[in-house]
Structures are given as structure tokens and as C-alpha cells.
Length: 328
Image 1 (cartoon, one colour):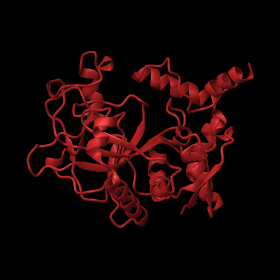
Image 2 (cartoon, one colour):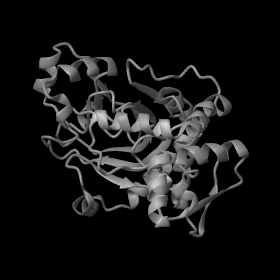
Image 3 (tube, one colour):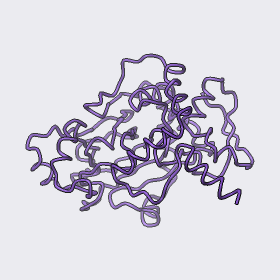
Image 4 (cartoon, one colour):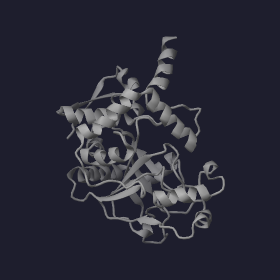
């Protein structure tokens, strides 16, 4: 009985819980987020105030009309360490075998990263860095949670209908950021991430018949709704980063120009949402607890908020802590 009451409490009075009865529809997700904030006002205010408390003013912002931002991270020390860590992981995987075993989506392969693994320490350093979280927090309106961290590989070996290679909008949240850090140069031939800015996407989305019931849209549907479209093809160099609100921007990726020169597109994918979305923070995906050594009070609080270490379900764990090493 106590366990059942505990689950009910967790789902109703604490953000980031997942109701399986909700389908991924725009209205459902938006309603869920509003209700979540309503039942968790103190947590919402804490995350909103934390923006001013822990992060300085910045000129680098994501314009809501655009819904995306391109940033050069080539000289960013934490980003370069994360890239090197990802490349090391990538080199150890037999991707052909992994593709056959774990490929869930036709156009790309995802290798989820365990934040408790010391080998991924530099990636988590970067994912929780003040520079990155500052930009995302100001766009979302409160300090976000990291929902997922993965190496995203597009084999670029075929074109698939009704897949991520078709125009679509993510419906996991009504406002979110997916951050792609290119691990190699990406040309137009390599199937870059492509999107339509948020203001145009909204106009197009509501012109398409039954758009809220569809998961994917054909090019014909998109260009019928609006003839002149600003399609942004996000090619880039190794170290370029893309912050995109994939819940506001129509987008697709991994549409390669298949030839002998076509190569896989490899990126670090970091997925951020508000703490009040149906998604769970990344710390709850792994049945372990974690301690960070040599972390100052400010950084510890940022880790607590971004990784979801404050979450009720996480705090109840009694597992042996894992030594992650120094986080900077």
C-alpha cells in the first residue's frame, strides 16, 4: 500500500514523471507540462531563479523565431575533450554488428552513453558546462534536465520513407533543445541535419491537413503549404555545434547524396527538456547512484539540477555510489 501511494505521489507531485497513458500529441504534452508546473511551483521557481543565480548574462541566445543556433566549439576545451572521448568510444564499436542488433530507426543508429561510466566523464563535463546550460536555460525559461546523451551515427547507406529522413516535428515536449556536436566534418553529401525556422514551421504545420495526427510529412505537403521556404542545411566542420528546438522546427536528417565519397555522419547528441516534461532525467535511466569528487558548491547544484540528481526517485536509491572522477 505504501509503495502504491509512493508511486502516486511521485507521479502527481513531482516533475519529470511519465504517464504512459499519454500519447505523443502536441496538446497532451503541453497540458502535461502545465499541470506539472502547477503541482510543483517551488521546483519551478527554484529552476527559474537558478538562471540568474548561477549563470551570467550572455549575448549568445537562441532567437525563438528561429528556434536554432549554430555555435563554433572548436576552441572550447571541454568540447574538444568530449569529442576525443566520443571518437575513442566510436572507434571501439563494431558498427555493422551493432546496426543489425540494436538499430531501432531506419536512418540512424544511437549508442546511449552511461553517465556513470568514468570513460564518459569528459562528455558529462561538457553536457553540464555553464556555457551550454546558460544558453539552453534562457531559451527554455528554467534550468533544463538532460534527458539523453548518445553518439548518433547515420550510416548514409539508403533513403527510407516515413523515417527521420522525412520532415517531422518531435512531440516529446512543446519546447526542447537537441544539441548536435559534429565529430567529423559534415558536407551536404553526408546528409546534414536540416530544418525550417520555427516561425515558418508553425505557419506550415497549421496549413497541412490533419497535421496533428501525422508523424511525418512529405516534401510535397511542405511545399504545398508554403512555396518559399527557408530550408537551412546545417553542414559544418568538426567541432561545430547545433542547438535546435526540434519541437518547434520542422526538420529532417540523414538524407545523403549516395556515392563513393559519402561517409557516415557522426555526432554527439545531447537532449535537453524542461524538468516538467513527461521525460525522465538521465540519472533515472541507470540503476545506480553517483558521487562527484572535488566539485564546488555551484557546480554541484548545476549537476543536481541538470542530471536530475535531486529527483525524488533518484534520492530513494540505496545503491553503492560510483566514482566518476573530477568534474570541472
